Image (spheres, rainbow, N blue to C red):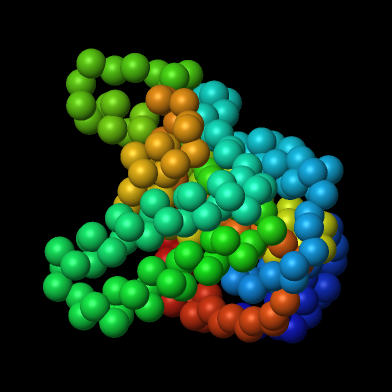
Length: 216
């Protein structure tokens, strides 16, 4: 069902969604290029305030956020992540030119973003189990909770006139990210958001709803 069809369906059902969240859900895009202008701390705090109102397992709120504002710190983070990326791709046997292309792209995205937010989780307030299976499920619950906070980051940024892009790189080098930013020991990097005022437009598509849904 496309956006127009969805709107017709909602109207025919006398359903009136909140315009703000409906707009954010269907018009948000993952933007990778931003204008050079800075983003105020007030706007960043508004985005993060929305993030911490995500649902979480046991309401333990395991999300943590490291906000990277300075050029120096962004370069340090990008260089450290880039070095790990090069090493991993070399081990994989990727051709050198492709390795450098990937590393340069990652470096550019991080260093050219006005704001970088590293999404982490902490297990300090989560339940502790002695058996591996239940502890693993508890960890997954924390990951899911952090991911929902991350979704709120993307939606809130769009609603406030900003754009953002979710990058999964920290999952592949969590210790590198922790060291580069001097994060607390219990903070486990999960993702990285670049954020700023958009300097590009992007479109996206979705598979038809029936491709992902079973009715029983």
